[in-house]
Length: 353
Length: 234
Image (tube, rainbow over all chains, first blue to last red; front, side):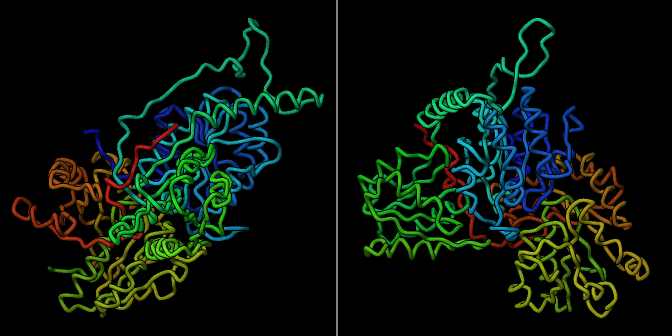
């Protein structure tokens, strides 16, 4: 058995990033993700890496942009208000087609909001956040083990598609502790012929830039980028199904909400209600196929979220509104109890959505 | 048990200080002692002493906790009645110190009182399964950083080596060389092995000083087979 260590979710991200070859971390502290920076501050100097606490989130994301352009594995981490500050940089990184890993350990919003857990940055992560036409690969861990494995996966996918991968976690998964191991981590490496590594006067110089002087050129670049996004959508969606084989009702939940939902599904099953769970692991690309297939089988959906109902729009979109979708939610740092989710399942069984 | 007037629990963050402090306070209360427990953690935003407010209250343990604990206010402030812990000598005080040197800074202002009274025990809580304290040398480094930050020296060591729900008797016994080395390097005695109660019974034959811990259930607890760490993909 692989060696087990007891880690906080935030620490697991940091250690996984180092194991994935990340030697450049630029960040700015914010609750509830500060352990990522603290871990990096302790470890990076010992392994010849760079830990830099920038003067702001805006500075740190632009340092990420620079390091990514140089072709190294680089990351930053923050929490909701801090990620809003990074939005401009995220857009520039997308517009320049360089790979990076960005972590958002979400807290309640909008505004300064609060420090308790939340999933209210779903729209920001999956629909944009920054300006312009772009996408990020959005990974939603539901355990400390997944904080580690999806961080490694995130670096791999970022390099593979020259995109930003975002880990969209929440304060609870960041702070909670579980035993994990790193043994089966698969580190992929990709050539980066576009990177700014110095020409030695032996090749044409590379340019990393998001400014296009001719509208025709910008249009072509955007269209080519979306061709790449289409490949990501076709190949990289990940999800988990739980008790879906004979399910008549389907709960959809990601991250911490999925753990509460899973407990509720197990209890409902014990009551004889045929209910299952689809847990999106990638929020972009959204697991369309799983939802499409489920829409042909089940009588209705329940979207469980720590926000005012954001993912529910994608559930409706990808089930083509074939079935009713109920919302079971809390927000502001509050978390639905298994009993609240169970009540929503019971209501669904009675046809109340 | 023979208790000092003040018992402090400090160590690396995530080492189990809060759980041990709560269980120790409850054990003293059970002996009929008047106990006050103080949450001096100004670092950790979640999972605090205040989470156990109900069980502490039921046992008659008084709780001194930052007024913003578990709220949306990220303010590293201590409550004014924290001075009770070091000034009111009529009760036994249990102090839960924040993790690492950063958490221990908050203790500094109370240290003159603790030293003056000189009836205290400060335990370093060690978990060999934590990534930054896997060796005795690393744990000793954290000990020294904490001592430098708060100005108080540790008096003993607690072995809280565990892997949460995956902890077995082997997890604890495998940690014995680590803990012996830490005792040797620091020159401090081992106070006790703290172990989740159901497992503690199986260890009492082979180990001295096993202290059983009750753990809080949390809303997000899932049996490991239900965690679903292996995803589907297209």
